[in-house]
Length: 91
Ligand SMILES: [Zn+2]
Figure (cartoon, rainbow, N blue to C red):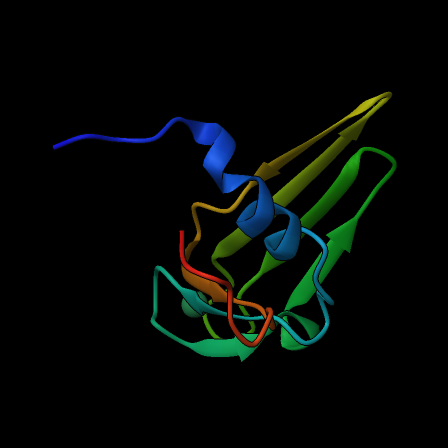
């Protein structure tokens, strides 16, 4: 089976990472609770944020901000849903 390289993800990635975080929803990998990120419990500091599940307190997302770089760990989410374009042309 043939494959494409990662450059093909540019459009989808731009849509995904330019979303309204307050409207995005996700599923907790620990307890399966589905909620918007706006409903999560967020702990912040000078280096970034820890986002915890409103239901079970598991860590959903960690964002670490360093000069010139941002690290994103989303392993606490089974999936995340964001609003995107209505349709993307095939091909
Ligand atoms: Zn949970």
